[in-house]
Image (cartoon, rainbow, N blue to C red):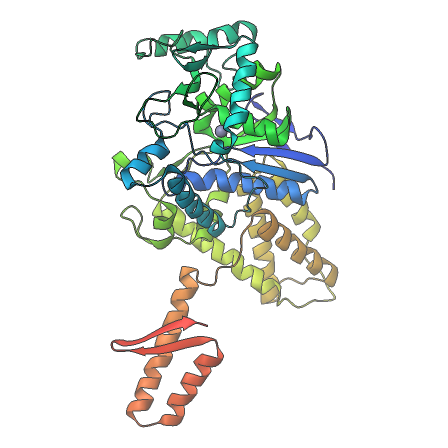
Length: 489
Ligand code: ZN
């Protein structure tokens, strides 16, 4: 199929035609989570955005190697070069080994990602598993003259780097402004400049995550792992690097500087950033009292939103916005997404029951072209979904008999929905989606009431037949002291 995919490159600040460096192979690197707590709303968006990209690239026929890291060392509590390691802090608090914390929250992260129907990455490397490679990268940067040692720490020399290259090219920040903004905050005497960042930190005696190195016992700086592991698994140059907009500076800016300082040229052809999420119009934060994990979102166990929202509703909701636009989680918007998702899925099952006609009054080729045009336009999913709803209208009109479809067009329509709804948008049917579950519950209640009346009237035939019919439908009824419970077999 013809490649017309354009993506917005944060580096060039414009949409570019996607042309892989070494087709049919595509290297995709995405910054993964720091695993010291449950995944929250903020984790769902990059996961779904780059899952969509991964799915579409594969759909286009590319052989994609998708690398998403697990940060399990070096990410300090204040996101800068001071303070405790986030993992180690949690480990101390819970009296666990740091790697127990990492395993526990990685497992939970994977469960949430599976619920959201994101495909697992091809490789999921851990920062702590690449200490030697990170030390080698540091040695290269020191050898090239862009890092210095100070009291057992290794810092990246931003000023020196900026004399030869351009620090700030991704985020658009200027080094003089950085200098003005950071000078006063600095209490870090061992740095030449306050905006220099750590490649290696000396471990204080109480710091539990520590490794030997040529510069003494310590641990790697947070930005280093992504430069190192992307290079290891995708090569010195690769196609796409993704992540949340919050990572653009300093994390991705530092990654570029490290790569260029080590190898003399950039690594990444296209930088992609998803925009951030808010909740009820506010930035989400523990201090604001509106922090909500994905588990709490899916179960409704929170004080921020009115009800539970299923993983597929959340996925659909995220895809209804363009990835570069901000997205606000509010009850109203989520409820609308829940309805929209159910309408889409109802149409998908209706599609399988449509009857072929000799006549044809619908233009599926045009609909298909519109869908591809939308996804090729920097993954414009809101427009794509709007076109799919035009497809829903067509399906419902055919079912109602006001439009006719012939065999060829019906095949095309089925393929179109299958490709876009399931393979590319990554949606799937949800048996226990709340609305249909509630409707089923009401039907069972009604039948059980009839059974109760029948039993009171000693009408055993009716009572038994209701029990048998429910059983035939795959519904298990268990009598309890307060009434009954039902479950699907
Ligand atoms: Zn990263």
